[in-house]
Image 1 (cartoon, rainbow over the protein chains, first blue to last red):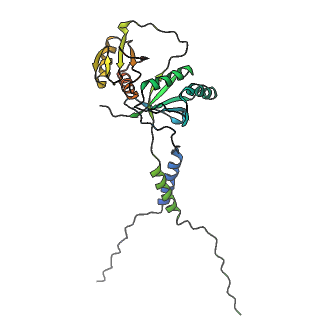
Image 2 (tube, each protein chain N blue to C red):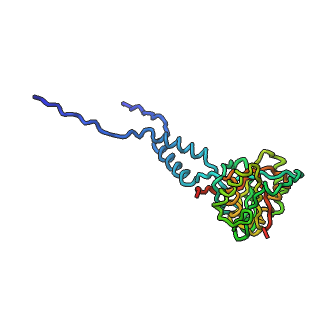
Image 3 (spheres, each protein chain N blue to C red):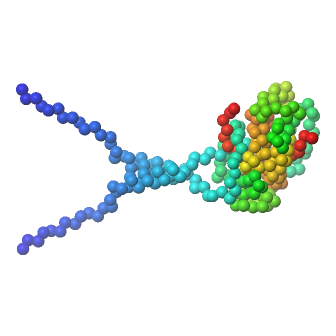
Length: 136
Length: 135
């Protein structure tokens, strides 16, 4: 009897679409990532549980470090100029929100003086930026 | 004489390395981008010229944050983690409760945020911010 040799099919993973997947992922990362410029004032934010999400692209960012150095949209400004700059910016774009990024170690008096200037600039709502903290 | 016909090859761009380039770029973006989700506590500020409201003491809960970050609710010292339950209890008794938050100018900002966080978690909607010390 003539027995035929069984042909073993070679197992292989098709890799033809790898390049397409890579390209799709690349396009996703390129379109979703925001290139962040170097911060003028670096801060360590306080932790909170009740925080809500901020959309940074719709916000004016005010940063305050423990020594009282203030940055307005990542450009250093004297603390007494915050109100005037804010009023100027809001006159051009009234829909912009304000996010206050103050360092956890900053004495409250410095933060209070910034909040006072926000009130004078007729800001209705401010978001105090926090780090997400797990509930105790 | 027999002259061989010159074969003209079709011009083409080699695409073999496209996937390698795409992967390299992908690795670059994956390693350099950090997923940053910013969060914050919303605070409604009073409008300039808004009339002042006189509050009766029975509708008021006073929270003091000292320069040493010690927290007192109506003069009674308590840990920050207990502020939430303390305010929630008061809110149950007095539904329209106003939380008066008095912060020492020297208190660290983190202490203020921690107390504000607890007040928000307790469900208090009306807040009065004041800079000063209890004594």
